[in-house]
Length: 502
Image (cartoon, rainbow, N blue to C red; front, side, top):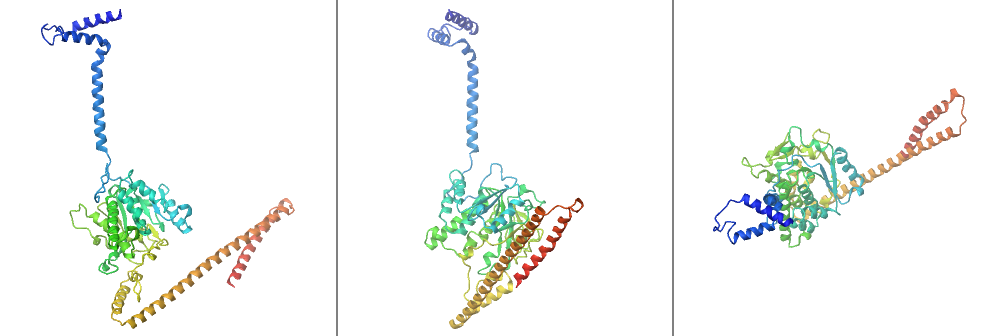
């Protein structure tokens, strides 16, 4: 019955909707072949489905359009992968560098903060106490490789060449320099050596007259002695930016360029020494120029000149600066900001308003493994600490030494060695005396605390077992006890001091 009604409805609808056509026409519903086929087809399709079929087709078209647009959008938004085929000059940001510097403070050291020596703990604490809104993290000898693999491995920047290079290096100072650059490239924020004390909060790094959105990097002058740029030993070290403290936004091209420069340099050194990278041997100056301040400075100045259509930027731009300046989105601070109190480069002192950090140098023992050039009769020219007269005397003495006979040279060497021995013995005595005074001070403090504690216990005993007096006199024992305490403690302290002096 239902099939009959459905067929009747179908035929009625069809007759009303379709205009008559010639029975002989191939397209006519009454054509012997096509008409029969269409009739059978319509009989098999429910009426409701026929009515909604156009809507289904529209939905399908919209779905395909959205799917195509989504796939196209993903293809366009695919992140840039740094290729290993050659140096990367610039890394594009999705929307340019971030406007603000990441609120992160990074340090690297042998051990984690729970195992810091007291002096390291004291300096590290200044960073967290002065910057409570910042994340603080220390990479150690135990987790540095994990960081490198995570950030530069397949799930990061996909730079296995960088990962393997870092893994191959055995020299501690080279890894330390390289790691700070890798941290700043991957994460950004503030980097500070473990022996650097924060004198001011990080918010003071960028003076109020500048817009943070116009700055990608904050650095400071360390050595500004360009008059020695041609000196055979001091020349490469005479003009440099400080890299024991600096601040970056993440993924700056200069940091990646610096990392790649170091990789190329150490590969060349290994080839010249005919050894694997793990067995490379470096002296002090090679470290400074290869990964240290000289390498850092060269990379920054080169980056400043990328796209620069004006006068070439050189160190002369930063010599004897009276105030900070922004060059190619790099804020360069005066020498007193990160390197005050050096005794050279007009660095001022740490009490100045512009001093932001204080470098204590107690973790800077790496030169013992990478010695400076030391003349057998006159020692290291760096001892002059950039004093012009001292350097001239050293240069003159070295030249005169070349003209001496072997016997005369040996006498000069003997005099130098005797003087060095005397200075070392004097230094050892001074150190022992300082340690002795420190021990005595601790002992004296301990005796004072014990004396005060003993008197307080005696007073408590009197209060506990003494008989109470009349109401008007209840405060009298306490007054006497306080008088005894005030009189006896100075006597005990003075007595102990006399004993110590004797």
